[in-house]
Length: 213
Ligand code: URA
Image 1 (cartoon, protein in one colour):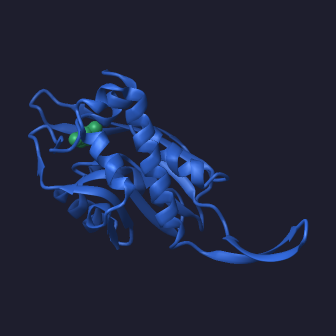
Image 2 (image 1 turned 90 degrees about the horizontal axis):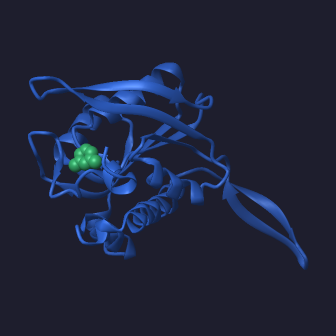
Image 3 (image 1 turned 180 degrees about the horizontal axis):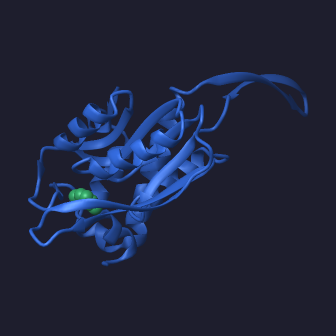
């Protein structure tokens, strides 16, 4: 299942437009805020696919039968670019436990890169719904590596992947390696540079949120 936000028109498309806009990007607080708002939007959309139970709630005037989420998902992200997107998800799934993974591209002398994964902090994921947020699904290599690492350690019940912008190649890599994952994408771009940056994309999401490395 792939949800492609660009197929619909809502205020969330404006968040993507602002994330991409090099003039608006100069305001890093607004960049983080737009990424967070996108995370909130996706949390709302994903919630429609989760399990609900009916709960009796006592109001000051009586009893109401309310539909509430059975359990909250676990929210994972890849440091550091994924933090604002994860925060947006957490604003809505407000009792969720969180998982953090440090993974980055280690560029070799010939320009190729390998994904270096150093640190994982995660709650128990057995039987849990896992939402993995990373703003840019470029080659998809770090996304697949991180999800596989978690799924080797735990029996994850359901995997959702959230990205602001994805490349065609990244989507294909995820679908080939994580066929059961549900994809929630803000936009799909056709091209990538030789350094695996998405074109037109938005640039370096980590640098735009937190400053150049
Ligand atoms: N990471 C980014 O921040 N931007 C891209 O275009 C690709 C990977």
